[in-house]
View 1 (spheres, rainbow, N blue to C red):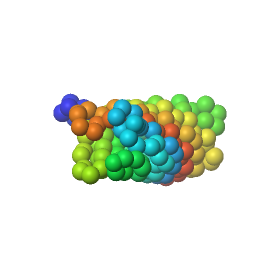
View 2: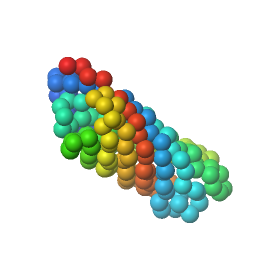
View 3: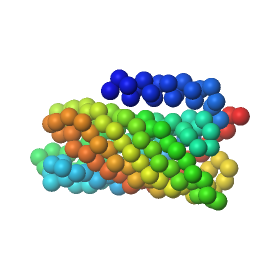
Length: 167
């Protein structure tokens, strides 16, 4: 576990030396539950915010925060996730395809609250509307570690964002 954080720290430090831009965006879409949570709670609409550091056209480091509230019995479920991911990009004409992976912390609130550690991976495609504006879809799967309410979940989100160029 320590090695994963060390790798992200070293990668993040190298980004600071070659920072080309900052990505800011928002997302909205479907959050789907798996495991025991899916039999007790409904899938729901989720919302999120993104902030990324672009080091070059191929790689960036993105912090994503996502929230969803699921109805069900015996009480509702709220999921709040905070993830950090390394994203790779492939731009073809007006499209930007991404693949990413990274760690995250996931807070589940029911009658009691629990925080779990996990990994997420994602794949997405953005339509580049202008040099600074893009919109697209992204699929993310969150694989959680631990027991006691740590069910994996997935999301399909529409996102809109802007890139602020620094150099």
